[in-house]
Image (cartoon, rainbow, N blue to C red):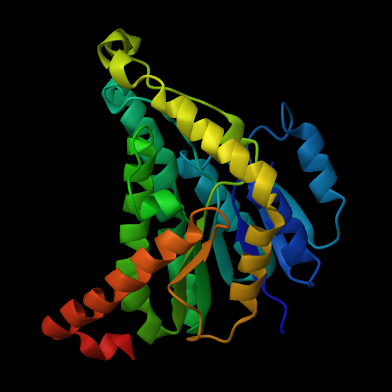
Length: 287
């Protein structure tokens, strides 16, 4: 496999951390982004920087200038970007009504607009070389919207929507767009509970207040029984990079807990999606 220039976001922990190391181990040149490399993430940045083939960049993904500077840095050194892995994400959970407009704006900025900002910047280089790969890490909650994860699901639905349409638009240009749907894994993000800011509505939901705890207990039991390994997600990224151009699936589900149900939903929708695309005169894009 030829060496590729790979940009990965959200590499200070979890899937991103493992993905950066796994991709670099294959000889690809990895540019790993994270925030606050001189502060709270300094140890993580130093550790990744010491690994062969990894360059750490301090990037605030919601800052247009910060992202542009990172892209300019990579292009100045490498001349192109072959693979973009939009891994960084932000999770908030709780009663939907407790989310203020500002809360929703924040989660959409990080989970939808920031990935698009990067896609928009790398696409010209991929088009120029008639080859490239964009991997957008969404979630099983990007297929279905679960109670108490409503706004998180909304953001992942948004990223899935961008990814699905873009997949068919740029494939004729030699570019693959792939969606990676992790399920529940024991990562730092999965252990954080960030409810909406408007706590004044919580008393009105006392009748169902225990359901988030039930959900957490079910996930905890699954962790004990299935022992899911976050490395599986990193391995899925490596596999997508390794596959030949044009042969990468639009969706890859990595979920030992509820993946069988969500994969069945993905498969059923895909059949009807292809029929609808054909009905709109765009069946040739499926080839």
